Structures are given as structure tokens and as C-alpha cells.
Amino acid sequence: SQTIHQWPATLVQPVGSPLSLECTVEGTSNPNLYWYRQAAGRGLQLLFYSVGIGQISSEVPQNLSASRPQDRQFILSSKKLLLSDSGFYLCAWSVRRNGDSPLHFGNGTRLTVT
Amino acid sequence: AQSVAQPEDQVNVAEGNPLTVKCTYSVSGNPYLFWYVQYPNRGLQFLLKYITGDNLVKGSYGFEAEFNKSQTSFHLKKPSALVSDSALYFCAVRDLLSGAGSYQLTFGKGTKLSVIP
Image: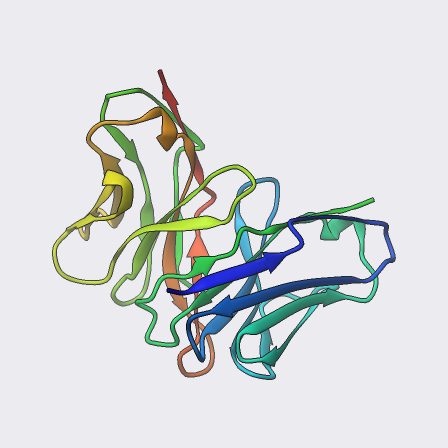
């Protein structure tokens, strides 16, 4: 069966520090990969998605970047964190198909920028 | 762009009573609709989806959803609520992105369900 791992679970970082969040998927190949951010426990916003190694698309301009160095690895980064980067970050994967496959989410990373 | 709306921020229901969490959608073309549940400090768990076929879709944990094209709705239902069903529920719609095989799910703002013992 497929599993998705996301770490760390919680992170407290000072303003201006770098960030690296990692997500890996097991049990599938060529997945679509996603980074979402959830603010204030509610609405989810798509940040990045990837359909293959090295292929990253950004949905919103921001202080963050993403990379996909391997087929099942997706990394969210920042060179200098802002207070507004605080939130709950969720990685997800789906079967690369015509959109009838649900997204499967990791357990998220709670980021607090102080 | 596709969108969904969840008109209720919170729904309270007594344990054992039926529950309904509402969702309406706005799409061009055929809708691909999903329901998810989120427990505190956890990721979203997939409950069910509607792609085509029967308007009543059955999913995990005894949940079902009714697709209504004329009312553009996709309400989540359960015949008998459990205290453990208390959580945040999200409706979502498939939204195509640029590039072959690229799509995302666009989510509603969520409805907090509280089941009262």
C-alpha cells in the first residue's frame, strides 16, 4: 500500500532563518505531488505542484520554493522566513491520471515563525 | 476556475441523530467532487468521491454523499452520528492545471462538526 511521510511534525523558527520541509511517498511511482498551506485551521491553499522530477509549478508568488530531486521526494524551502509563513503545511500525492484520483495527504508540519 | 462553498462554519448534532454537512459547487463541465475529514493537527483523510454514475455515493466510516445536479450540491450525510465523527470536514472539486495530467483539488473553507453526547 502507499504511504506518505512528512517531517518534521512541528517546527519553530525565527524570522529570517531558512526552512526545509521534506515529504516522501512510498508504494507508488510517478505520482503528482503537492504542497498546500492551511491557515488558521481552515482553508487550504495550493502552493506548488509537480508532475515529475525537476518539474515544479507555483500557484502563488511567495517567499517559498519547492524542489523534486527524486520521483517520490518533494521538498519545500525558504531562504529567509517571514512571520506570514507561519501555518500548517501539508504534502499530498495523487495518481497521475485525469483527475478522478483523490489526493492523499501527509500528517502535516506545524510551522511557527517567531 | 472551479469552486465549492460550504455555507455552514459549524454544525452541531446529537449523537445518534442523522447528520448533514452541506456543499455547493460551481464548475464548468462535469464536476469531480470529493469529501475529506480532518482531525486536530492531522492531515486530511479522503472519505468519498463523485465522478459519474449513481447520485448517492458511499464512502468510509458510514458516510455517504448525495450529488444533485439541479441544485449543484454535494451534501455529506450519515444516518447516525458518533461522537468520534467530531472533526473538520472539507468539500473539494477537481480543478485542472496547465500541463497534461495536472490537476489540483480546490477546497471549501471547511465545516466543523460537533457531535454532542
